[in-house]
Length: 496
Ligand code: ADP
Image (tube, rainbow, N blue to C red; front, side):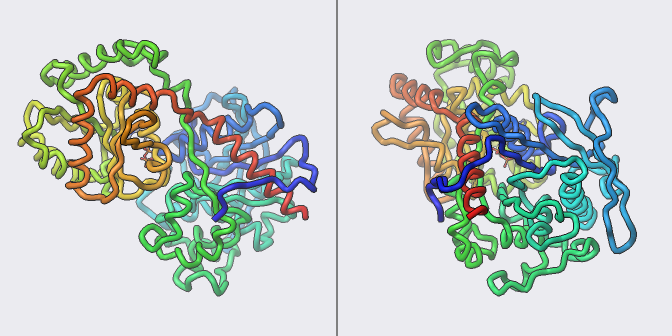
């Protein structure tokens, strides 16, 4: 495990660093989940860094949901991708977002009508492996030879593997170093094997890779990337354990020297309570007293008793087992006779929706679930609720806790992954920004909520927690500087 990356200074780092950044989605063009946030923000932050010029080109599939005016697009290249069943004609369009050059790959494996991720794993495998190889071939067509290939999750791992195995699509990239960023390890690309072979990418028989993983694209990327980076330092350690390693822990331990973790950031302009058009009262750390207006307004909007003394607990999350929604349900039941109000905004598992609706019947007037994806309402909740629950069983990084802190909403979270790295639970409250619990059980969460309810009764201490959280620097610039250092180190070591 590498904690500190020190550039090797015997090598001259080029004054302009060229990076090819591949992702399945990128905000604002197309966003389905957290990966879209990262691919939308990190390249932009790297591009805007002062000090060294980073010429970063973002490549994403031209999904049907991407809406762009004709005049904002131009044809950058036409490619022919070899495949066992015949050549695949490909068009690549170029556009600019936030000053960043973006390439959109278009061809039959990326049908206009199909969603970013479908239920058909074979089709998704075909789409993303094709996309990854087309992105590599594109570099030669446009004369852009990157120092770094930065791939994300299983969708773009084929680019890493193709480069390492000297696939024809990568013939231009002889000295490019590769980074594979892992956002969520359990998505291994289980059904990618026949598709890989169709594109002339054979399985590996490397002795360290478990046999069952030798034809899955994420493990193949993890095997061959020059460096693996996870989205938080703690998650980088956790994936080496049997609990979080998805069966790859022994193999990953053997690669530990090439694994590190860099926290994601949040867009601090987009998430700025001083400039948020959706909330009732704007506020900052200096005028935190204004925040109470948002709580009152939220209580009114969801038909709760309007009393700002009652602690208001919130959760904004995918409704998924990973997120510990069931733990929140049992904790609230344990604390049923305490004074609180709670709201959950989320979409996902029908079973969890049913369980939450049942809880609402038990706790009318104090518990209200809302089953929709509603970014405007999420802002009102971050700005008005007192506490945000994040009882995730595992959490590679997590954004909601960082947004909550920026909005003075104190997180109560399971001490895992990025939650552990971003939230400080200080018993003296001097440096604290939230509350952490260690065992992912309803009981442990309930006692931690109780601890928070007790502190909430002491306004001065509570305000200290809020302002500590609001002062944290979760900006992308901070993360981008760490990526830049990692790029420099890799370039230097590749050259030695
Ligand atoms: P993950 O990416 O695993 O779903 P994160 O905490 O990293 O979890 O990011 C979740 C993001 O999605 C946050 O910005 C959160 O505010 C937002 N979000 C989740 N559910 C909803 C919802 N129902 N409505 C609006 N925003 C939501």
